Amino acid sequence: MTSRATVEGDDRIRLFLALELPEDVTTELVRWGKQHLTGGRAVERFHVTLAFLGAQRRSSLRAIADVLRGESSATEQFVLEPVRYRETRSVGMVVLADPSGRATSLAGRIHARLQKIGVYEPERRPRPAFGYIGLQNHDERAALYFREISVAPLPNK
Image (cartoon, rainbow, N blue to C red):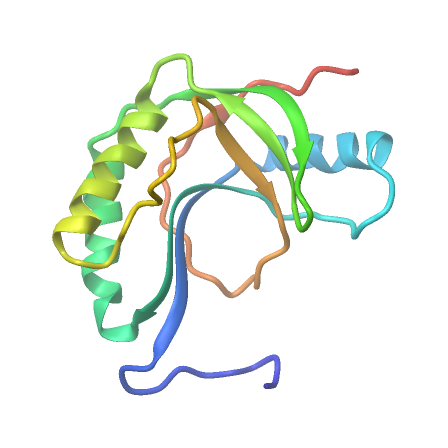
């Protein structure tokens, strides 16, 4: 596969829905990572995942985007607060609290609507009480639809 791969016809594409972080938050996360994290790769792009959809038919993209646009436009601005940092075998993440519950509500409404159109099957394990910022690089050509959010600064620990 080349870096300029294309998707044609109704091929399957790997999809997830996410909130892109404001530039000042991204800058702070990059600074914090350089100070406190060792090993791995440097990361400069971040997101808050709302739903991982996996492989979906390209033809479902418009309906999925409509769900995201509709639910995000009906959501008031919210603030997510960093709680702690944690790592798994393949990814590092910042655990977030959602004091207003608006982010959790947004994700829940998106999940419910995506289930109704048959493109989302939630995991069967209990959901965590906190959200995460995934520390992963993604193709800068990826289209993200989001509503502006604020995130409180990371603690200097």
